[in-house]
Each structure stands twice: as C-alpha cells, then as structure tokens.
Image: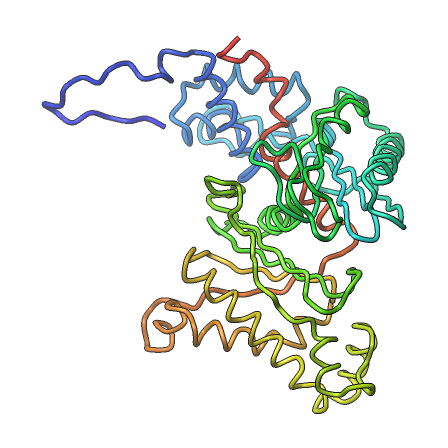
Amino acid sequence: MKTGRNRGEMPRKQSLISGKPQLNRRINASLVFSLIQEEGPLSRPDLAARTGVRLTSISDIVDQLLEEDIVQEIGEGESTGGRRPVLLDINPKGRFAVGIEIAEDAINGVVVDLSGEVVTSQSTALSSTKVSTVQSKAESLIASLTNKSKARKKQVAGIGVAAPGIISKDERRVVLSTALNWEDVDFLDNLQRATKQTVRLVNNAMAGALGAYFDRPKPRVRSLLYVLTYLAHVRQTQLTSLGCGIVLDGRAYFGEGSLAGEIRVDLEHPVETAKKRMGKHAPARISTLIKESAKDPSTYSSVWDDFAGNLGEIISRGIDFLSPGLVVIGSDIPELGSLIGDKVRTVTRRRTIAGLLSNHGSNREAVPLHFSPIEPYTIARGAVVPYLQELSLAPLLRDSVLS
C-alpha cells in the first residue's frame, strides 16, 4: 500500500522491504493472489488501484501467476472509456492439496482444488492407533487419493495432517495426544520421506477453525473461535472430547508456546450424565440418547441443559478473552444445535460482556454463535487451508531472499 510522510518529518531509514526487491515481490504477489481469491474476478487495473503497486509490476506478477496456472483469464469486463479490461480469477485446477485427519477410529482424507472444492475423498478404518499402523495406513491413503485425483506431482502444493492433541511449536511432532495414546511422536518427518511432499501438521480443532473461517460468506469476519466437540467418534463416554481453534485476521493463532486454544477442562459427556441420573435405565450410547431425547424431550432435557450450561460457560470465557467476530461449535452430532443451541446462546448472552451490553440497549450485538456439523471430511479439508491461503504461491516465491 502507498504510504506518505508528513511535512517536516525526518526521512526514514531504508526499510528492510524496500532494500529487498525479492521480498517486495513476494509480498506484492501474495497481496495480488489474496485479492483475486477474495474479491475476484478482477482486472490488472483493479489490482493496481487496490494495492497501490505500479501497473507494470502488477502485470509482471499476473503473467507469472498465469504461467504457473494459478490464475486464469476468464473474459472481458465493462469498459470505463478505453479498452475493455481482461478479468482474472483463480484457476481451481491449477493446484491441489491433500488433507488427512487422524481420528480415534479412522483416517479420513481428501484432495481439494485451489477453490477449496473436494475433488476426491476416502476413509480407512483404524482398529489401533499404534504409530506404525497409522503411518502405514496414512501413506496408503495418500497414494490412493493422489491417484484418484489424477493430479500431477507438480500440481500438489502439499499435504495437511490434522491430529488430536498438542502439536509442537515447529509443527513437526505430536507432543501429547490422549485420544491416540501418543507421546512425542515425530509423525511429520516419516510421512515427508514416504510421500516426498511438503507436510504440515496441525491440531484437529485448529483445522476445524481454519475450515470454518475459509467457508464463511464474504465479507468474512476477522476473527473466529471454533469449539470442536466430539461426542460420537470417541472410545469412552465419561468425558467429552473438547478442543478449540482460534483464527485471528484470517490466520491460525497458536500463541507464543503454540498452546493457544488448548482446553484443560473436564466436561462430562451427556451419556455419563444420563447414567448418573437414570442408572441402569439410561441409554448406553450417544446415538440411543439422541433418539430417546427426540421421543421424550422432557425426560432428557435436564441432561442436555446441564451439558449446554457447562459448554456455554467455557465458550463465554473464550468470548470475553478474544472478542471474536463469530463462534462456531463443530460437532459430530448433527442434532447438537437443536438440542442445546438456545441454552448455549442464553448462557453466553448472560455471561459475557458483549452479551451484557447488548441486553442493556447498547448498539453492540452479542457475538453470533453457529453450530456446524462435522462431516466425514470436514477436519481433513480444514488441514489444507494453509496451502489454499499461502503455499499455492510456492512456485512464484521459490527465490528466497535468504538464498
């Protein structure tokens, strides 16, 4: 963007960016690509006007994006007095990315194109979460997905892997995962050697957050709090499998210690609550509890109210700390929104500052809260969002300023 200097202000020292033409080009290329991705179709003059970058530089960047098949010309726009401008948009088939989710009972995988559309998908069951078993099945699944997608190797931007648990700051190891019974597992290096592709490792809740952010209608909110709530695809039903992902200004936020969003709280599973209240007459499985709740809401309403109240308290703290533009609750139970949605919203309106202000006639509104069912490939698709945002430009940015 263009910047000015006030009269009388001392000249500034040459910035790092202005002294590094390659870095300047990288930043401008990323900006051009982001604008086309967010607001396209756009013309070259549109891009020059929005970025403040000279039209000749914009044309050079666009030419290379076209050469790399990352963008495409899709026709002419309206004339403003001269020649009709050529419009540019993302070329969905110019790049692909592979995403896999390692869950407690399965590995789910997808191949997506540059627009985020799923090209192909596949799952494989897990009878064990032993590292060697997961490694072998993940490699086979990735090979199968790549073959089915018919994507050429140079078109694959990389592989995103989502796993439950704490991920190391360098995004290379699973430090601790109680769901998988893993501790200090160097999963990324082994997978990179086997696939000969760039691999990024991300927590499953963060993958859900990135997917939810990427799918929001435009204009998108700047920040999002995502709460991942597994109730069905778990090996035990004493405690709810709960995770959190934070997106700030469109990017995953991990914090200084890479632990932002990690929730150490015991949230009782609804099946366990029902068991304590009803004894041997309680449903033993979450699917049965949901069916019985639909048949006889009054009998089971207190179970869901307890769960909603406790979950609402947790979410309220996140809203107060982060002040996000949106809260999304992702769950493997499609009915969860109808079972607890009203109660959770009531709690967050009552227990947050934003809710308090909205209740007292302020022009502020309570933070919107949406429920988003987790489909079989939701988390796997979210794991590739960093590639859709950034690594699709890898061919253009290969000349590092550090080389």
